[in-house]
Every structure is written in C-alpha cells, then in structure tokens.
Image (cartoon, rainbow, N blue to C red; front, side, top):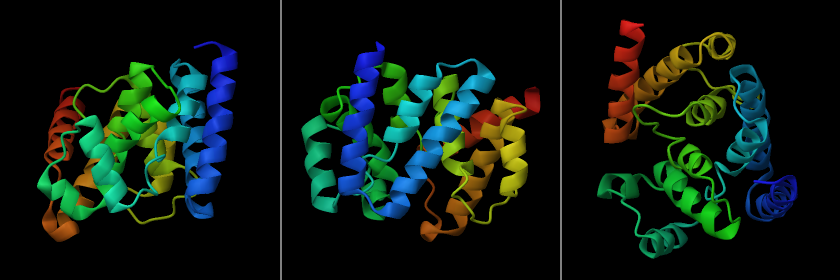
Length: 202
C-alpha cells in the first residue's frame, strides 16, 4: 500500500463516516483509529495499517437490517440465526470487512481480518487483529463499567498485548453471558477459551 493509496482511502472513509454515522459513532471510530496507531507503534506493527483498520472497523455499524441482509447475501457471509436475531451488534464486523474491501478497495488481508474479527476475536489473532480488538474496548470515548476497570485495561494494553486480549475477552464473555438473553457467540467462546489457556500457560 503506497502513501497515495492510503491517503485516498482515508479521505474516502472520512467522507463516508461523516455522511453515514452519528457524531457519537464518528468520535468512537476516530478514538479506535488513534488508539490502534498508538498500540501499533508500541508493538512494532505498521501504524498506517493499524489506523486504517481502526478507522474502518465500524464502517457497517449504521446499516439497517435490510441493508445487512442484502450484503450478507451479496458477499455470501456465514451468519448464524442467533447472530442475525441480535441485530447489528455482531454482524456489522463481518459485513464491514467485505464492505471495506469493495467500497474502499482495501485489499490487505490483515486489515480485512482485523475488521472482520473485531467484535468476537478468534484464536491465534495477528498482532494487528489484537490491536484493533483491544483498541475498540479501551479507546478514550469508552466509559462503560467492565469486569476489569478500563484504566487497568488501558495500562495493561501497553505492557502485554496478549494478556490485554485475554482480559478484554474475559470482560466481553461475561458481559454477554449476563445480557443478550445469555447468548454468547461461539466465536467469542473459542476466543475466550484460547486466550485464557494462553494466559495460564504463559
């Protein structure tokens, strides 16, 4: 990805976000993009890729149910009935990855995966995937209560990325168990089990 292509994508994404997302959502994606870039510098990942992945991670967040279904059909995305029943909370990441590839012409596979898995994670994520996954949870606009306090998670994220992934996943897992009628995505459960075991062994 050369700088001109990167700049063009950022400009296109900026226009799209401000036209299609709420001001609150726009602030969130900017926060995730900046946090992703900071974490990338800390862990030796390309900061431009991290910023772009963070900036595009919620590009499908504003889609309606009908729009989501249309894109799911168009891209032949594997979405379970349980995920679909919850609404955009889970499926926006999968739809967003394909949308970013087509609409913004982001062909980098690592960026695609960082967007695709940013809500549920997966076992064995790349460093870029981990960065966006964590940044989405700890960015400065976030102020929600969590099992592990955000100030602790923010500090931990710059000390040990894998442990931060483990703790963020733990927070997400137990939050989902207590909400959404107890439904936890199988992908979230796999991520939780994998990183809890990783943390235990390391």
